[in-house]
Image 1 (cartoon, rainbow, N blue to C red):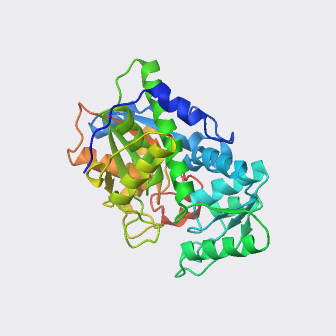
Image 2 (cartoon, one colour; image 1 turned 90 degrees about the vertical axis):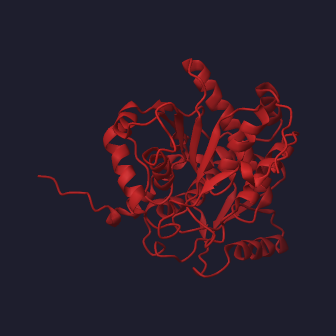
Image 3 (tube, rainbow, N blue to C red; image 1 turned 30 degrees about the vertical axis):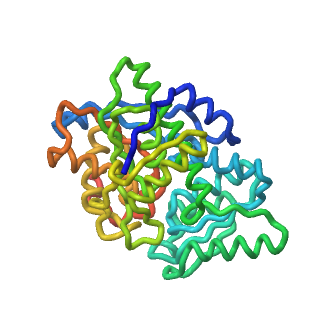
Length: 352
């Protein structure tokens, strides 16, 4: 059960964020784009896109913002090699490889030998260009265990490794902290526009990005509803439940010196738009991505951000959102995956 805490000020949160080690990687603030043609087409609320696909490093994405805190912390503790394992088309891996290259840290990526592994395109191609060491694992293997085993071998040889992604509690909490800061940035942008805050923020998130936004809303006492659209469900090893997301909110607040008492009933994280499975295109994501492209000239991929965006569109079409609402879609990136899934786009013609 959640219990209210006295709201803290934005200045207090900003001050706490400033005390943390941080690497300079992202182009901030990211743009906040109004989407009037999209809103008119849907007949729903006013819509803005918060463009965290424009963070600058390695085609951008939300992980760049998160890596500022994760790798800032790593450098402050003498870490000399970072380890990440995920799907072969992981956005996290691509952005980590670039960030590690910029900061001079060795990067080991442990992609699964999934359906996309043999096709070296998109995120996987880019990660390799940044010089990451690629150590693939079988599709059925535990990524968490593979990363832990790799870290143990490195420690035994005198290295100082840090694991990122699933199973890496400190890294996941720092990733959430980054999105407490992102929420402050968004609030300031709405103030500059002279606009009231949105009623809803939609984001594609498994855990940390949503947790940071939710923690910020709770700390500040704002009424904004954070709507997480999960690209995976409990079939995937990396899935985290609303209970675990709530715990991540509290951990992020605690790392900044604040207390949150937050239960899962405050977490809105939907698996309704996963489609067939994680890493596979969903029909709704394809259809809504095409709508966004032709109305606003903005791209989302069909397996990650596109699924989140289909959640926003689905809620408008079902009446969960109406014309009086004000919605932000936080675009977390993932655009290189578009090229890896080119064969799934059935609406691409051959011209005249």
